[in-house]
Image (tube, rainbow, N blue to C red; front, side, top):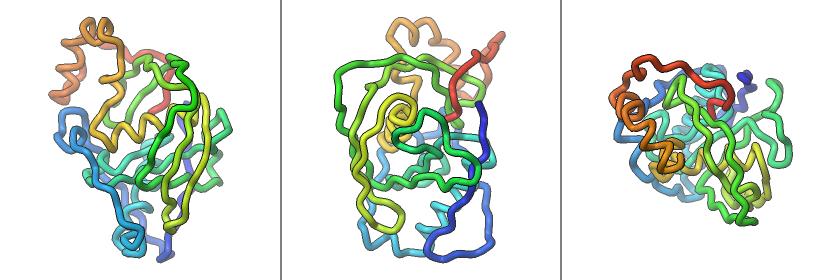
Length: 207
């Protein structure tokens, strides 16, 4: 499923709109750990503009989430068109959530495998095991505290995006057997090439 998402303007409301270039698998920015932000930094117009541009970019490319490293920024920020307890992505007229410095705590040991995609790895899908239920603490874009629990689809999105902040891609989460089977395909993707004879699998959001 692909969806469009409404933009939410930050502390400085204006009509500007920027679609940023999304880093592709193989770019070193996707393998670096992003740095935490101080609460005071969220008053910076440049940080608020970055968040707005991330939302615009996620909207443009029909993603469900987007992390700052994916648009070449080394900050611990991601945006996601989710509601913590809702299995469906947010409708186009709803503002995406903004997570800054997220910390995830698993609530169960149960892992659930499901399809995922990624804007940084176009046309590639994989079945990824994730913890089914999590607690999340973070800051919102105004510096307020987020304390939520989430499960299933929104929990998967949050885990996927938080992985980006730690330099981890969803392909790293595939089983060892699957990674060995797909080794040549993954190496081609890391070079920015579509694997020879590859046909995209059905299923999986571009998270």
